[in-house]
Each structure stands twice: as structure tokens, then as C-alpha cells.
Length: 383
Image 1 (cartoon, rainbow, N blue to C red):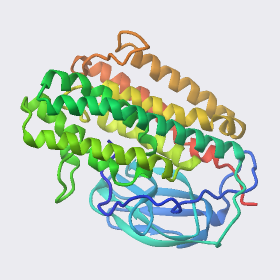
Image 2: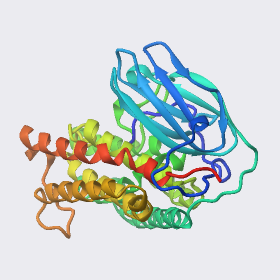
Image 3: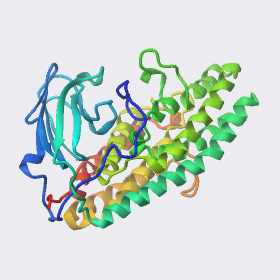
């Protein structure tokens, strides 16, 4: 699952976010009036400007507080435009996004808890003609098709899992559990574009917000591996999982996906792998973490490969490093499965502390250059 979200998350509308860029200039960056300096402390979230031109936007973030923080660009209803998590005290981060004219909020979340400290901001300029590199439009279309294929392939596997739960067949349900999650995990780089589906199908017990009912895969995972029983509630939750996944399947075609959201989402997902999956927190009952891990890397790599032609022109050294780190991480993951054509990974209980350290190092080595991908594909000036 992705990290805990703000509570007012609502369904995505098709016209909510439009990608607006300009004339390509290799190696360029956002114009000065498109850069917002965000200074986060333990009790403040200061922004250098509250109005900026619509289009390519860059946040230059500095955490001057004592707590790890997160910074978000939000729609007024709290849907997420872009984000950057796990910003340590005394560190700086840059985030690139694409925004349409309208009202937004920039939020800092010290301690990564609560609704955050917010500033109202506005993107101005009215209707601006999009002049984006057509290769990026093709990349977005291809990733949307990829996400749709993953959603379509997930449904029959999830239905097999749900059927086993409803039959009370614990052994069959355990066997079907991890395969039913692969398609979802592959699309997690753009999970925010699916609206409120993520907290319905993939939330863990410690990720629940006040008053939220625990539904989805992990609630059933607990019943199968820890409780070792299937009752009437679990059978109802199995039906609910399928209902929610069918909703997800329908939303993919309408989801707002941009080149920068693909790049930023891939980076944030790798951060989540490093902080929550390498530690074994995600699949704490089934210990099928490596299946999720591999699917996440595949989804992030698909996003990267589609954006790669443009990134290579703007930052060839970055592409060389990303190719190297994706290969290294995939090679490391392959050591934990029987053959490269299968998802038959060992139980995460069998990965010792040294192995977890290697996985963590591999993810971090990839996440660092991946954080620069959005800027590489958006290395443009407004024309």
C-alpha cells in the first residue's frame, strides 16, 4: 500500500489535472517564477509565493524542523497532485509537477501524521495550449494501457482468491492470495490517480484513520494466517474486495496520469518499499513481501522505460545510472526465487538481517537517481 493519505480523499474527475508544458530546452529547469521554495519546520509550512503560472512547477523543499516531514500539492478536496515523503531534518528535496490553472494547497506534514500544515496557493494563466513533447503523451497513453491490462488481469485472480475465502478453504485462499495482488502492486506508481481505492483494498491495520473500517486484502490476510479462521465477516469482505477492484478497473481509463506523476509515483513507491516493505511490515502475516516487492519494481521500471527516450536526451548520465540500478536490484531479487519466469519467491521470514540490508541498499541506490526523473522529462520552458 502507499502511505496513509489525507482523510478527504475523493474520486478523481477526468478534467481535474491537465499537463501543460512548453517548448523543449534540453537540460533546462523551471523558470524562476515557477519555483516555489517550501520551508518546513515542526510547526510551520512557509511558501515563497502563493501564485504561480500554470504548467510546469517545481517545489524546492527544505526541512528545518526536527521531525521527518512530507510535502504535498493538493487539490482543494485533498486529492493529491504530487508529494514527497520521508524528508529528513536538515535535508532538501526538489519535486516537479504539472498543474492546470486553479486553486491548490501546499501541505507540510511534520512527523508524517495528521492533516498537515497548509497554505492556499493558486496557479494562474487561464487556458494554456499544451506543447508537450508528443513522446510524453505516448508514454502516458502506454502507461494507462499497461495499468488497464494489470487491472483486467487482476480481477480473475482476485475472484479466485475471494471464491476460496467464501468456500472456507484456507489452504486455497492462502495459495491464491499473493498472485491476486501482483497487478495492483504493479500499478502503485499511479495509485493516487485512482482516488479512494487504495485505502479500501490495500490498507494495513496501522494505516487506518479514525472511524475507517478495515477492508481489503490485508484484513483477509490476517484472518488466514494469524486468526486461521474464515467467518461470515470475512466472506462479506471477500465480496467487498471484488466490488472495489471492479471499481478500480473502471477508473483506470479515466485516471489523471501525467509524465511527472508517473516519475514521482515510481520514486515514492520505491521509498515505501525501503521504509515499509523491506522491513516486512506490508505482508506481516503471510510473509509474501517479495512478491509485492518485485511487482512494485516492475511497475516503477515500466514507468521509467516509457519516459526514458525523453529523459535520455535531457540527462543521459541519469539514464545510464537508472539502467544500472534497475538491473542490480532485479538481479538481487532473482536470488530469492526459483526461476526468473515465476513469482515463486521464498518466504520473507527466510531473508536474514544481512539480506534485508542488501535489499534496502539496492532500493535506496535506485530511489536516489529515480528522484531526478521527473525533472529530466520536464526539462522544458513554457513557450
